[in-house]
Amino acid sequence: TVAEIYKVNPKQAGAVLANSIHDDYIKDTSLHSAKRPSAIDYYSITMTTLIALYAALHASYLIRGERLRNTADRLVAAPVQKWEIFTGKLIGGIVTNALCIFLVVAVSKFLFKANWGDHIGLVLFVLFTVVLFAVSLGVGVSYLTKTGEAAKTIINVLIPLVAFFGGAYFPLDDTEGILSMITKLSPIKWSNEAMMKVIYANDLAAALPAAALNIGLSVFMLLIAVAGLRRREGL
Image (tube, rainbow, N blue to C red):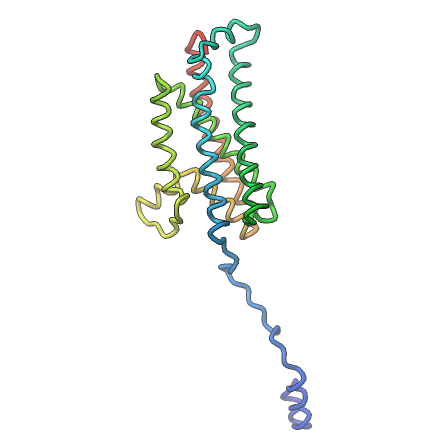
């Protein structure tokens, strides 16, 4: 437009240029958004999933604790089925630990101003599946081991390893070879990545594979627990 005006009236072209300076003619959209998590944002997510995974320790004593307190026989003698007792203990453990995790999210969001995104419901759903997996893991391990100390030892060794390779302590982004394969096996890794994508990229579909994996592993561990329960005369 200025070139055409210049052909007719060069002086007017200068006036047009002087009065029409804009910086928004071209809009750039980056494939790698500048919106990235700060330290408080990153560790609010990773530490929350790590805390959720430690629910396995509590869950390992849901049934075993009844045997240690010599209350298992009383429960079995009650007019209820074993599966009802098992289901009640399981639901109680899941609800209790889920409420604790949601409280952690609330404190980090409102007190420390951590960014949990605009789709908090979907993020909480992913966290709930982490809690479900943790509780199922604890119950399953308790039936695979003979003593409570053995179950506790296995869980205390497994969780830090899963957390380390899942990037809970520091990010593990540029991994290659066998290390890359190991990190992809961590429930913390795929859960954290899913929530990061939901929060920072509005990729809502990323939550579904992570949630499905957590639920699938939960079902597997619960099947182990149910098989162990059926082999026992009591709990």
